[in-house]
Image (cartoon, protein in one colour):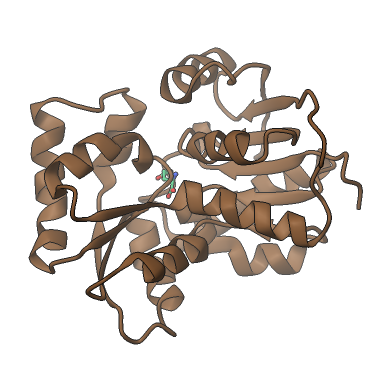
Length: 266
Ligand code: DGL
């Protein structure tokens, strides 16, 4: 496998761009190819079997681009497809769920960990499995589907979002969680309102950041990272409108979202 190939990053839409941000920070010399299945997003309300089918179609597309590794930058897709993906592709596949769970285990002081995620991630039981060996952890799960809508509309503050955040986070507070996993790659963009509601004593774990760290670790072990500074390329594919993708993507994570092409997966 060649070091010079790009890393493929898959998400249902825009949330995976928070993983791209972390990858750009932590692996600045790597070429990236991103695919957001925006035409079929959100994945969160969809049945797990369908999320798996869509995710494998997206990952197949990225493999066809000649990538050296795949990153499933979506909790819903990771929950549904990680096992199949690791069997199916001859390249390392990293994801968001296990890295976030390991970080939460290290961070918690009282053993009460919360996770907020999409409905499909919560229903899949992926976080229950991830914590199965950590018997001292009491896990509280809460679906927070409207957070995705707010992020995609570019709304990160205001009374309506605050009211929704207070409702979603009430069970986390009631369970006295001292650590909360942002178990959807959209949610790091709502860190402000979430920490405003929960206060400083709750540690927020970004599944996006944890995923980038785990990708760094995996590719270092496999000698697949560039060691020297270089001009890295970043290409973006969407199943939706390229202009919309670039506009929303830039608003969410910044100017590196360029060179956007439409692709038809179906
Ligand atoms: N980014 C997806 C995740 O991490 C959520 C968005 C969606 O529902 O498609 O689960």
